[in-house]
Length: 72
Image (tube, rainbow, N blue to C red; front, top):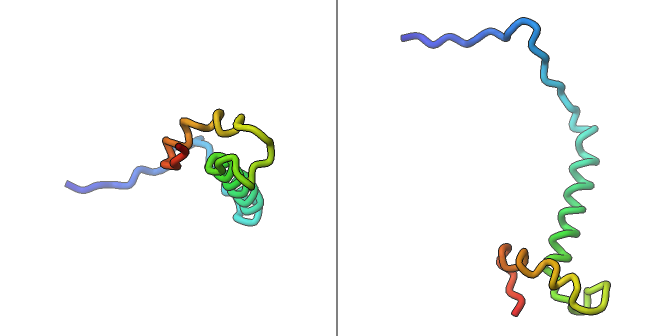
């Protein structure tokens, strides 16, 4: 039994290619944004806490446990 490679369908849209030079700034931006989010989720309202109180800790409490951060 032989397998043949299917030819592209006539009229099918081609997938656009995105140059790495255009993709890199967005990847860096979202990488830094993700790092900032992980920082705030993992910070335990200590010396690095920007707002006073426990508001951020309570908002991300379950997420902290899901990610494996101990908080009690």
